[in-house]
Length: 278
Image 1 (tube, rainbow, N blue to C red):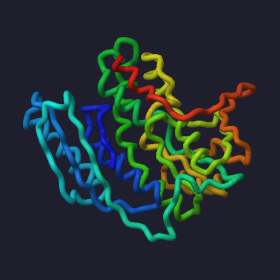
Image 2: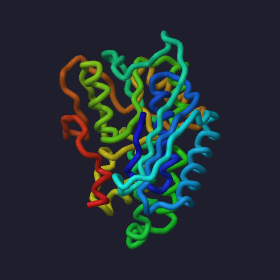
Image 3: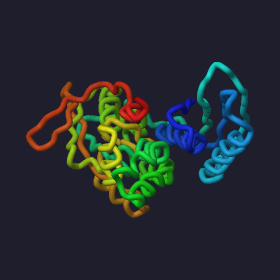
């Protein structure tokens, strides 16, 4: 179950994909969703129609059903809140755990760090960004929503063989690295220079003084597996960018290296994205 509150634009699209991604990260095939929508009184019927249109379009893309839902108007909220509960299917022996990482496993990241946050910022803060950035760059960043699903890479990863999968949501890739290590009680050694990131993300984040590696990144998946390079090759052949960014260790340290510099990872705090609202 995922409540979505960080964005109004594209909220329905984000809500469906984030929920499907959670299912895919456990090795399950998404089957359907149930929705709960709470709107403030200022929102009109037109907004609800647009929101449901986004939800229906995302479900068609993923070939899943809307199995039920609830909608209400409430004075308790001052912005829309969409909660999506997902239903998936998987054989018990095929379940993948975030905590399944093994010592020596490669860590593979799909697509790019900061993906989701970049799309949200470009949509919500377009005018601010256009003060300093080219319109083409901002438009490209706003279009990152097309990469939100990790269902295709999860399927390839399971077929290749994985020990752990974790969709990169709040806290960004730094948070995800700490979480996948902590869940298995293992150390992590990752190389910052190997973490793929788009130039659009770097420039959008610079405008707001945001660290893109600590920003929500639905659409990216962190995968632990014994044969990282094989998985990367198979993902790339399917048109999905990916890179080996580190490995699991038998120490207690979870670190990011950048040349001679070493940074110790910590549990994720407030996501960097929320700085745009300060």
